[in-house]
Length: 300
Image (tube, rainbow, N blue to C red):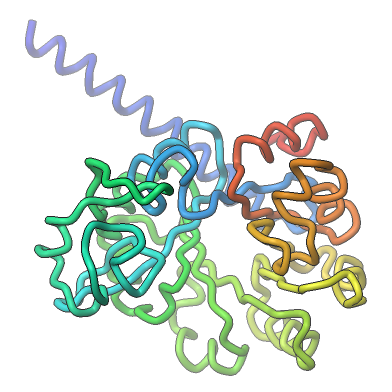
């Protein structure tokens, strides 16, 4: 009886694993399709309105609701361990105080995460490795602030088998990226961040396309008075995808989550229809997914 039960359990787990892997494969295929009308949803720091930011429950809930990409932040401890945390200090999101870099991992693991109301919870600070194992084969992963520890991060990606589903990003120039990360760029996805309000923004975009053909650019601009965001969709069509952040108003010319709550066509719709966004990072993933489904932009 035990052998029969174990066989059934093995088959069930294999089916679940194959199903999860199939979704990642499909998302990767769509991510590399520069002419797709599918709009990816990236959830900022996991689903932090449901659970503590950069926590395992926040990641799990984002996966459950059908988010395509989970954005997470990486910091390094005193003893060189990589953890999920946005701030360089422990003060805001944990029951500890001081710089992450002054604490060992064992000490940080004694702390509790705090929720958005600064209330202590039962959750602990996860390591990057723990998070990668949770997400393996289930969702694409965007690692922020991780380019500072690129070698260590890449070693963990290889160890956990998550290399192909990770999008690394950074705001370094094309020249800096080639010098620092060139040997990795055939193995993983690197997404440049370009501030369109800077004088050399278009030149940097051209350099990245000529040298790396990135799958997407994360673009930032403060105001619609900047003409460049409207010019780029035609320039980049068929070459690369465009990622915009709707987290707050100065990241995408005011077309943020708050505007979208009042008028999603003026917020999300404008970024998609006028500025050519194929990926949106949001603090309201469920709301954005509902909107995109109504617009027919989530068919895999």
